[in-house]
Amino acid sequence: MRYLTAGESHGKYLTGIIEGFPAGVKISRDYIAAQLRRRRQAPGRSARQGRETDQFEIISGLSGEMTTGAPISLLISNTGRDLPPPSSLPRPGHADLPGMLKYGLLNATLIRERASARETAMRSALGSFALRLHELLGINVNSSIVSLGGMRGITAETAAAKLLDARRTGDTLGGVFELTVENLPAGLGGFGQWDRRLGSRLGAALMGINGVKGFEVGGGFSLASTSGLEASGSPELSGGLDGGMTNGRPLTLRCAVKPVPGLPGGVLATDLKTFRRKLSVSKTSDTTAVFSAAVVGEHMAALELAAALLEKFGGDSFSELEGRVYEWRKRTGKILARL
Ligand SMILES: Cc1cc2nc3c(=O)[nH]c(=O)nc-3n(C[C@H](O)[C@H](O)[C@H](O)COP(=O)(O)O)c2cc1C
Image 1 (cartoon, rainbow, N blue to C red):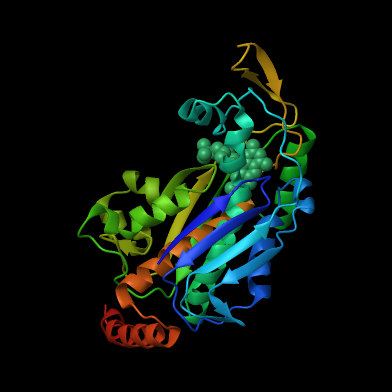
Image 2 (cartoon, rainbow, N blue to C red):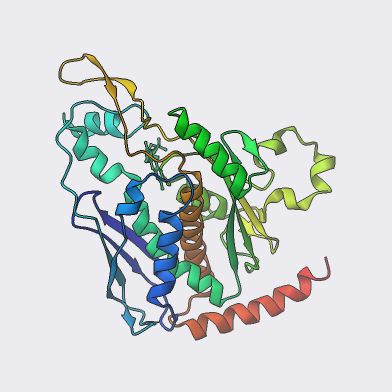
């Protein structure tokens, strides 16, 4: 199974394709719309999101509400706003400067169009299919916010207050989100080559989310200061992965999201035409991306785990896959239950 997206922030559409997805997976338009809404309406987003409606069209791969095994392709409409004017002012903390250098362009707008996290809407749409596949196999993918701007123990109320405070002072916040995946069959991934290891694949998928700067599995960085005696008594610190494979325990992954670099009061930047310092102001920036990145994280992890499931069990149709997963769980479950 593989997937790809195309499209720009102010282009007519975002497009996406999943290939190798099994036939016979029942998924409704409402299910996909709900996943897009979760990403779009997550706390911390700007008023700009009110203008995005994420109207989408399924172009291929479904008959009614059932996948057919053919490549699935989708379109999501952008709101039709005009392309912003050319700008030679790269915004610090964004793809602007390295992108302009890479492509030899003096217009940062052309870099922003594709580097923008608007593209993650399509990843969420594609991820909906993977999430649905997991749901039908009894695999639960969930996310939660571990911290926001350094504050732990986040509730809806404390998050809202923290975000309001940041907005009032013209600031933005980073944070940490956690993903948990329960009921995954043991033995997904591999150790034969570095890129078969599930941790490296999930790391690539999650670090591929705009603004994600850190990734941990289980105990993660804290394991560096945990003794072997302590760690051996706490198998959950492995985060559900040993030797690059799922070990039958819940998977726990964490991602650190940097504070949104676009500040409403502006940040000083250097214009690449004049080499003068100017304020780069982001009026419509989100206050934090951590909540929406957590949703995208669920979708990206779901896509990678669906690919790993299909590699292990194959199956052109859902019933084929389901039968094999059932047999595998029965066989490995007997062993795991006795440990
Ligand atoms: C869903 C989502 C929404 C985002 N919204 C904004 C935004 O409004 N303004 C901004 O400056 N950065 C935003 N970001 C973060 C930038 O996309 C990110 O900082 C930028 O791509 C550079 O990050 P990188 O160094 O990790 O690639 C958002 C990220 C995500 C995942």
